[in-house]
Amino acid sequence: MRIPYGFNLVNNGVLEVNKNEASNIRMIFDNYLAEASLGKVVNMLYAKQIPAPTGKAKWTRAAVDHLLSNSKYIAIVGFESYASAQYEKANRCNVDYDKAGTPRKETRYVSPAMPQI
Picture 1 (tube, one colour):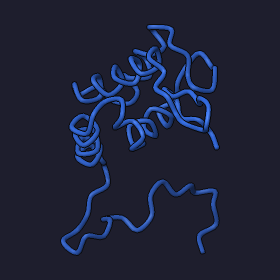
Picture 2: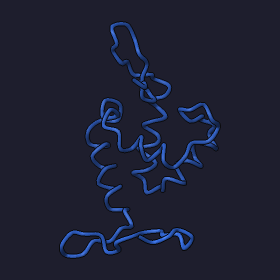
Picture 3: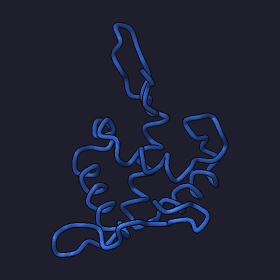
């Protein structure tokens, strides 16, 4: 099992909140809810020299997106902030749906080099 960012594994297999990383998580949620894009959150973390969970100097947008989607962070940010972030993520989605609820385009980002089946 991989231990989520912001938590430490203590005796008996119990997860405990890491206070330093928890403040970073709150900052990520706060910035995202203040209309910052995933890219802007990544740049903010890099500017503040907060290393990614992997140990690299810069976070990826995918890592920030996954953090915002992980329900384990309800324990750190609270249900209201977590639910607000999920609502924001759904509203910022750039995929349009038709009246039947299916995506408007059948395929997205198809490379011309890929053979079509």
